[in-house]
Length: 140
Image (cartoon, rainbow, N blue to C red):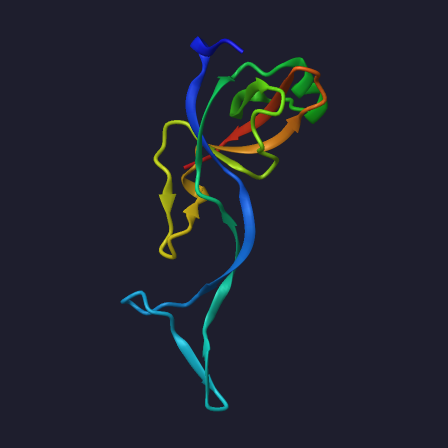
């Protein structure tokens, strides 16, 4: 790939499911007492995103014919693609990418995927020399 056309971006891969706890206004975990035992008050479970990794790649809003056919995209206005050398990026569908925006973190210190510019919607890795990644722009 031509280095001159590459742009710096960051990707974050989906990690494991983590438990989020209810917190008081000071940020301390709230505990409930059950049968004399303190149990953390659970707010819910989310999929954690790993700390973002810097990479450089070609990104284009002109979708290749391969992506259009493979993923059945009719309206490409909210999509773009990244083309990389084979095996360069370990990302998969559901991972997120930042191009212009700053990476944000939530109150629990986890990567906030809502601050990402794109969500990976699909990967076409059947080619011999290049991988194609279909990205959908996020609405902020």
